[in-house]
Image 1 (cartoon, helix red, strand yellow):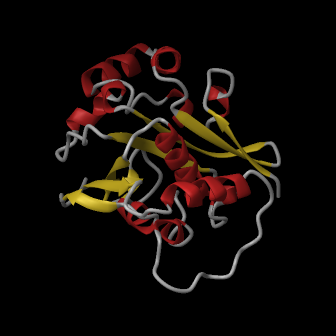
Image 2 (spheres, rainbow, N blue to C red; image 1 turned 90 degrees about the horizontal axis):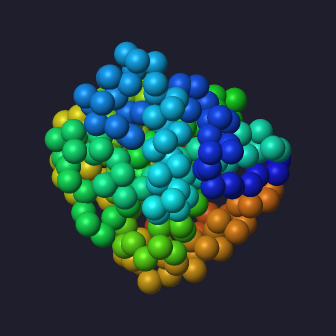
Length: 219
């Protein structure tokens, strides 16, 4: 299967799975999100949010295609553009981090390691922009697809809890915790731009890259 990564733009926003393409859970504060839902304006609010962020900060999402079929996506950006962050009990995020807000893999592509590919792509972009880390809020009671990442998945791909909470811990992936992170990450994402075959498990100490290659699939 041929796999490719594309930035999330207004042109491919409509290719996100429902209800994600119209969801404003992260893009608006809780009060504004409820108002937009009542007015039926969530799709317009989503487009306006993405358009402004593209102008101010650049791409803040990635779409993963398998044989030209949109198989999954990840959404990320500075906390200032994600008002829902402040509603979490473990906020705020660190000033040197970008927030990995949400993402999803289409059910027919589960079990192929695509969730880890998305995290790698986000990490590569964040490094290029000069940030030191990616932070995310987990859902420790996750029982099905939603707007918050399962805590178990975040741990599996290398995130560590920096603020505990029974439901929504805040986790961090320190991109400079290993000296070889940058070169390994860039090489990994380049390999993932085409068809990939599994590689033998490495011997020796476990690196951040190894953690990203193992663990459960993102929903």
